[in-house]
Image (tube, rainbow, N blue to C red):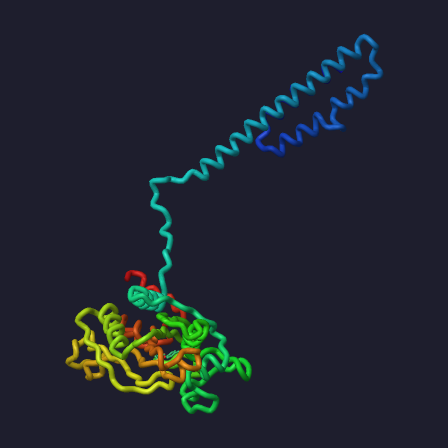
Amino acid sequence: MQERLQTLKEEALTQIEAASSMKELQDIRVAYLGKKGPITEILRGMGKLSAEERPKMGQLANDIRAAISEKLDEKTQVMEKAAVEEKLKKETIDITLPGRPVKKGNHHPLTRVIEEIEDLFLGMGFSIAEGPEVETDYYNFEALNLPKDHPARDMQDSFYVTEETLLRTHTSPMQARTMEKLNGEGPVKIIVPGKVYRRDTDDATHSHQFMQIEGLMVGEDVRMSDLKGVLQSFAKKMFGEEREIRLRPSFFPFTEPSVEMDISCFNCGGSGCSVCKGTGWIEILGGGMVHPNVLRMSGFDPEKVTGFAFGMGPERIAMLKYGIDDIRHFYTNDSRFIKQFNHI
Ligand code: 2U9
C-alpha cells in the first residue's frame, strides 16, 4: 500500500506538471483527490491494516493528498497568472498608435441659424418663450384677430386634431398666451422660436412642417421706428453691417400697419443678380404694429400700450446664407447634406 501511494503521488505530480489547462488540472484533482479517487479508496482499505500500521499509513496518505493538492494549487496559480499576462499582452495597446478618430457630430444648419438669430435678439434684451405645438383654435386664430370664418384662415391650411385643437400654424399663439398671463401689465419683449405646421404639399420652398421665429414687444409708446431699429440692427448683425433694409407696406390680420422687410442683396450689393432676382433686394421677414384687437383680446388696453411684432422663417434665412436651393434638404436627414456644415 505504501508503494501504491508513492506511485500515485509521482503519477499525480507528473500529470500535474504536464497539465496545460485548468480543465486538465481539475480532472487530475477529481481523479486523485476525488471521493472515488485511489487515495480515498486506500484510506477506506485502512480497516484491513494492523493497529500500529494504520496511523503511519493514514499520515502518509494524508501527506500525499496534501502534496498533490498543494501542487495542484501551485500549478493553478501559475496558469491563472499566465492567463492574465496573456490577456494583458493581448490587451496591451500601443499608446503611440493614433486613436480612432471619433466622428464629431455637428449642429444641424437650421439649429445654427436659429441659435444665431436667438443670440442676436437676446443681445437686444428679448427673452425666449416656447409654446405648445398642439394649440387651441382660440390661441392659434381667434386671439390673433382671425375669427372663426375669417378668410385668412385658409391662407394657413391646418392639421386639425379635434374640432378645437390643431397643430399650430405659427408661433404667434405663444405670444398671445404670454400677454394674457400678464393681465395687461407690460412690458413684453419676447421671441418665440419653434416648429409650425401647415397642410402644404412639400416642394423646394414649402414644407408641411417648418420653423418660425416670431417676436413681440409691447409697452407704453412702442413705435414703428422701434420696430425698424430692431429689424435694422438684426439685419446688419445677421447679414453684414453694410446691409441696407427697406420696409414695404403689407397686410397681416394681427398687425396694423404691416410691413415686409427686405435687405439689400448680399450677393450683388444691390445691382441685381439671380439671388435677388435682379431686384437688388431680398425679402427676409414680415412685421407690424400689433393690431388693437389682438392687444385687447390678450388683456391689454390699446389706449395705454402699443406693440410691434415680426415673424421670419429660419429655413429661408439658412437657404440664403448657405445657398441652399431646396427646403426639403433640412428634413430628409441626408448626411451628405448635413456633413457639408461640419467645417463651418
Ligand atoms: C401677436 C401679434 C402679432 C407675427 C407676425 C409676421 C408678421 C410674418 C411670416 C414670416 C415667415 C410667416 O413663416 S412665415 O411665412 N410672419 O411675416 N408674423 S407679424 O405677428 C404677431 C404675432 C403675435 C400676438
